[in-house]
Length: 501
Image (cartoon, one colour):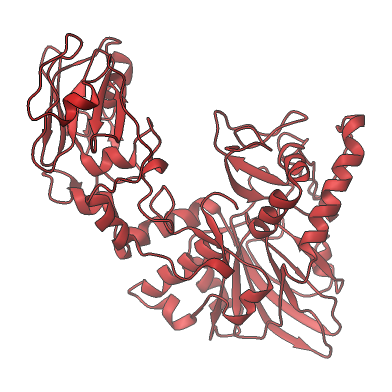
C-alpha cells in the first residue's frame, strides 16, 4: 500500500481534522519509544522522578509542570519529552532560525526577518522552560533574546523523530490531512460529486467540498452545469487561473484536427496523463461535453494511477522499481509552430516519488523524485506520467535493461486495462469532470458523429493554493486551534504558526 493512502474497499470513513485537533492536544502516546542519550538529556529515570539533579552537560534540569512536556538541553540540542518514553530533539540553530517573534518574522508578510547567516554556530540557550503556551528559550546572545515555540507546532514539525511517528489517527496522514482513497471500477457505485450551485455559491463551502473530493479521490463530477463554454470557463476559474498552453487557454473543440493531437480525432484514447512532454505537467484538467449529435460512443475512461501503482508495487516490485527510476522522454510535435520536450530531454520516470535525501529531475539512467526507489522507505508516490502515444525514443536504456523495461510497461498496461481498474462513464451535457492530472489517467472510446467538448488546464500550484486557503476556513487545524490565543499570532488574517510557513 502506498504511503498516505488506502483502498476504497477498506475505507469506511475519513476522520475529520477536528478529531486530529482533539487527539493532538492530548499528545497521544503512539510514537515508538525514543529515549534521548545521557549526554543530551537527563535519563528516563530522572525524568520520572519528582525532583531532579542537574547533569554537568545540561544548563538546567528538566522542568515538569503539571500536564506540560518535559524540557532539557545541552550545548547542541533542546529535547522535549511528550511523556517519559516519547521525545523530540531540536538543534539549537534550528530553533533560533525558526523564531516567530515580531523581531525575527514579519507578521504581515509572513517572511523571515532574522538573518540566518548571522546566527552563531555555537548558539545555545541560557534557559529553557516549559510554559503553558509552549517551549520558551532564552538565548545566550547579547540581548538575551527570548523565543516561544508552541507545543503543537513543535510536535507537527518534529524531525527527530519525524512527525509521522506521532500520527494520531490511521485515517490522517502526517501532514494532518485526510489520506487519499484509492479506487477501482467499484467507484462507479458512488463517485464523488457536487452540484454547480454548490460550487458557485458565495460561501465557498461547495467549492471546498469539490476540491477536497479531488484531493481525496483524484477526480470529482460537477452536475447541473449550464452546457455553455461561458459557464464552464467560469466554473474552471473558481479554482484558479486557467493555464494557457499550445492548445490555447480555454478549449472548445470537436474532432476536426484543428490541433495536431489525437484528442482532436474520433479515435479511441487509452488511459493516459496529459503534458508528459512538459517539465511541469498541469495539475488539474476539466472536461465538459457540450453536445454529441449524429453518432454514438465517446465514453470517458478514468483510472486511478495510484491504485494501479499500489497493485504493481505489491505484485511486481521489480517492475515498480523500473517505472520509478527509468526516465521516459516525451514530445508534442503535432503543431509546426511548436515542439515541446521536457527538461531534461530524457524526461522523468512514469512513477515520481518525493522523499528521501534528494529531489532528482531524472537526468540519469536510474533516477527518481527522491529516495531510493524499489526499497522500503523510498518515499511517497506523488505523480504519474504516462502517455505511450507521446513517448519518444528510448535510446538511453542500457542493453541489460531493455527487455526488463518493456516487461515492466507491459505489466503496467495490463493493470491499467484491467476491468477492475477502469471506470467508464458516459458524460452528458451538464456534467463536468475535473481530474488530478498527476494521479488519475483518462481516456475515451472511439465515437461517431459530432462531439463538442470544452475544458481547461489549471496549474497544480493554483489548485493547491486554493485548497489550502479553503482548509483554513472550513477545516479544523490542530496547530492553529492550539495557538490561536497566543498573543501576536494571528496578523492580517493568518497565523505566524501556520503549518505551511
